[in-house]
Length: 311
Image (cartoon, rainbow, N blue to C red; front, side, top):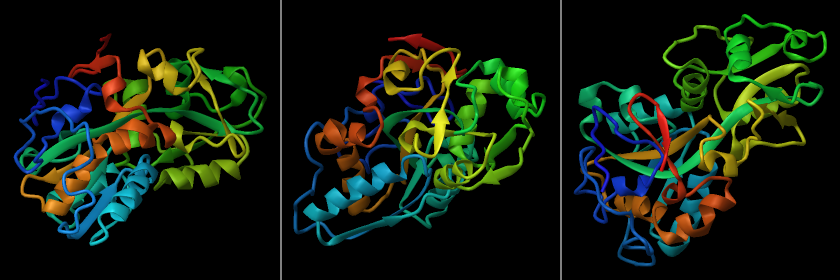
């Protein structure tokens, strides 16, 4: 089994369900156990009651909402509600105890202090690709990582510099604290920390969809589940199509594991819902229906430094 240590992560994006325990309350950041292969404990049981709240990454909020609807149909005395205000917000909220689950595109220790992380349990529930998107009027359909670095550092400012028409590039960024932004910048900039904000720093994935759909000559980035070719165009990276099939072997280089964190002493309803996220009811169909990859199907691993090898 994989060992997930809170201060140093050995792997990212493979067999993420191994971070969860059938009892969930028994597991901490240093624990590991196989994911449940059946329905969650308590699902369909009239004895399960409680309120589950979440905040965090907007990138997979739709997946969590869909799973919550299914779970509540089977457990009608459980209420699940939440928001998607960014990974940093969700991680802070679960650490502070203002929500029972914090959703994140990144590991907790990249956003929280060690003492905040120590009491959290990580559950990896899906993998998703993320890629650049451009306005419908932009003629460029392929960008290298170096070109993306130039655009999102402010060094490349005109589409003609990357093979497009003579038009100013309008960069729409995500706000600091966004896990999607952190994932995108890690793939494009490596260890560098760019301070370029662009023309706007948007709160949520939905805000990016709306603004780039109404702005000419713009560029931003989204997770695959938010792609909408009626509003904008997804572009290739290094000649590789931004599709899930190319995330499997890491030929498409921008992707993230989706995490759901709870406290070690989380209530029974929260534990049951997190187990349900790793069950066949969700991993068997719902994950892919929502545009994600089941964690158990990933064939690549990342070490703590972000180096990738095929598994």
